[in-house]
View 1 (cartoon, protein in one colour):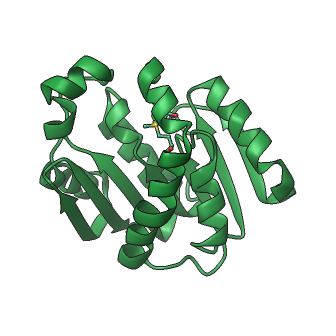
View 2 (tube, protein in one colour):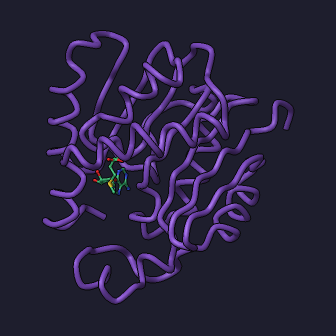
View 3 (cartoon, protein in one colour):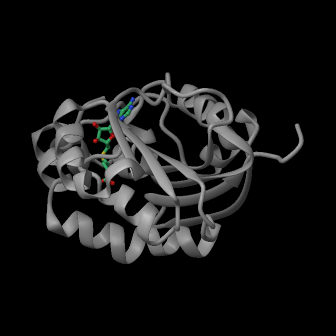
Length: 200
Ligand SMILES: C[S@@+](CC[C@H](N)C(=O)[O-])C[C@H]1O[C@@H](n2cnc3c(N)ncnc32)[C@H](O)[C@@H]1O
């Protein structure tokens, strides 16, 4: 689902980049470790701040990134132009990822899966495109926050079938991934690191 006007402004804002750099990425790095090179995928890349972090902090050699919103893709392409062939950005949908099986050593989700009505299909796709031994790094927004009356008044999310942290971790397991770190804040936000088993 595309962002409404308010959330679009909140995401394309220096405050969001600050939080993503100072808190979200640092937490995921502590939980999941660095990549030691290799190819990464960022789903729902927004304007591309996450892709910069995946290259500069997580240590990916290259990043493929996509977003459902062509306006976000245009912003990300502009932001990441100087990275040359290390980055590819396209318009795409996390429930049908345009990449062959086992393409990536890591997949990153900076707060997008809660925007997807059929979010379990996105987890299945993440599992499909990860290499055996590859890691999923996820930052997610939980049901409690999404259903809060103030949030419902301001932002637009799918409302049915949202998740809490344990339900999301269970769905990761059901998709074939093995969660090895989960952290939660205020019952509203959560961070996950999960690995695709090296041998099926
Ligand atoms: C809350 S924003 C987060 C953007 C960025 N990751 C960040 O942290 O700043 C969610 C993003 O997910 C994108 N999105 C929503 N549904 C999507 C889908 N099915 N596939 C890919 N991107 C999607 C939206 O267009 C939006 O850019």
